[in-house]
Image 1 (cartoon, one colour):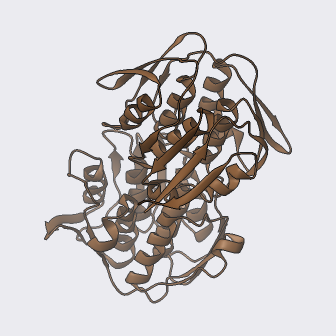
Image 2 (tube, rainbow, N blue to C red):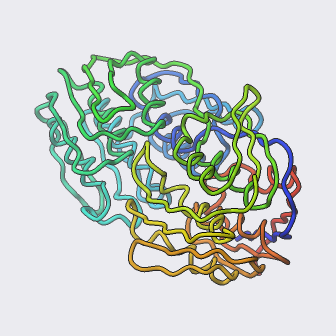
Length: 423
């Protein structure tokens, strides 16, 4: 197991290229099941989760050529010979996004067996919303030996209202509805750019979809789809993380290959906190304008402030020189575990339920800390960059799931980060 050793107190300056979005690539990879043949995906990040999805597709019978993934960001997926309808527990338990195989397997073959994602209790997380959507399209849903079994019985279009906004639920039901006869309407649908990216590729494949990016999506079912070529959108959360990296170190960075339109809520809060951000043809330039100020943040579904940027902003606001910040987490329970580790570095954070009160301190001190999830990992790296002395972040396998070559990118702009094996 790896750890990162970070020498803090170094100003970042230079250019960082933003990778393709993991949360767009995973559903797009799953969508290749819908259309037999050779699909080409470009701007794919070389990440652990991407490789896990490759393994899952191969288990189903697809041929995946990843020979150009690391060098050029290109994946070729030939889904013509998929025979298996079963996504096994051994892979699904390592990545919740594996549930995205359910909709396309059901749509193409009329049946699917997908293990419950690791740590998922139906009803506590929105997997139940995926299943409700499939049932409303005529599927019979059962649970057998830890697997969700979906069988096509009376396939028909329907109007489906999600009880709460669910990104993967919206994506799964979109893929199932694409080959379901009639007009399906999804209400209270997720509006995230990743949902739009999936819809755009499905349209390239021949699907009939309107309204992606709004809370109402309409799909007219078609008989079949054909493979295509698609370029994955830039990773908005990676870009947001590096915006914070510049701000927390008092540095200046130019972020290339990013879409500022996907980051409006994050940019607005950073401006409010005293961070300068300028859009240009070259990319997004970010710098610390002066003293950091406390701001209040409430996570909400897109286009609101993303839960995946909450931890990084908490690290930044722990160094605010004026004002007190109130951070309210409304999307996930237990998503303040990074706060306990930031406290070990000297942050002044008081938690009560889903709220955290952050009072800025003059400095953070390097410490040995432990990452608990992907975005918590990023927040601890950011805090380490700004801290005095040395910080050791353990369990960075979480980080490798969602950030491509993070320490290499940061070292190239002035950081001093070493990867080492844990004792």
